[in-house]
Image (cartoon, rainbow, N blue to C red):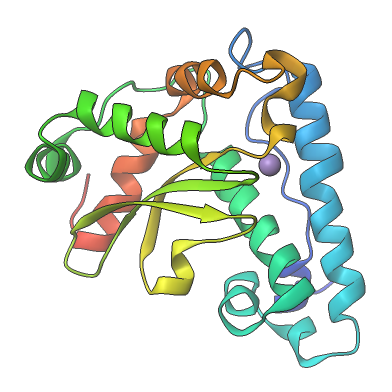
Amino acid sequence: MTMTTLATVALTIVELPYAYDALEPYISAETLHFHHDKHYAGYVTKLAELVEGTHYAMMPLEEIVLSSDGAIFNNAAQAWNHVFFFEQLSPRAKHHPTGALRRAIEDTFGSFDSLKQRMTTAATTLFGSGWVWLAADKDGRLYIISKPNAGTPLSDGLTPLLAIDVWEHAYYIDYRNARKDAVENLWSVIDWNKVDERYAKVVNIGV
Ligand code: MN
């Protein structure tokens, strides 16, 4: 048995929490093989090369994201973002938020449908590669945030709740250039149980 160190936590490839074909027909097994095994794993492997022998090698992944820039930030943030993205998807998704998150969404955006429409529009109109996020501040206020490339609301001191990956590698095999269709179908596999849990930690309540 080997010791688990902070370094190995940051530089470990996290397996998908479901089978590769579990999200079909919305996301194909082929897409998930490329997205997880090539793109996400590639960021982790590249990060490991970049941080070898530096003080970053002993940091948890989130600390690397918060304290780096350039290529180390890009690969660390992409590694973090992808684990976060994959873990919010489920073949047995709960399709709407409940409790405190539902109330916060209705207070901020008018309705859950309005939130989904705004995030879909943000994802469709983000130029180039990037991420659209639902995030919360420390008081539980909600924000929709578009970020280019590897960008994350962690850099703004916010807590990410939900991520939409709009890099072409996330959808091009299944949807070609139809990003809007990809995002609209993504809602079918986003598990709001997970998003509820993330928000409950921000506002410090049980789900
Ligand atoms: Mn991706």
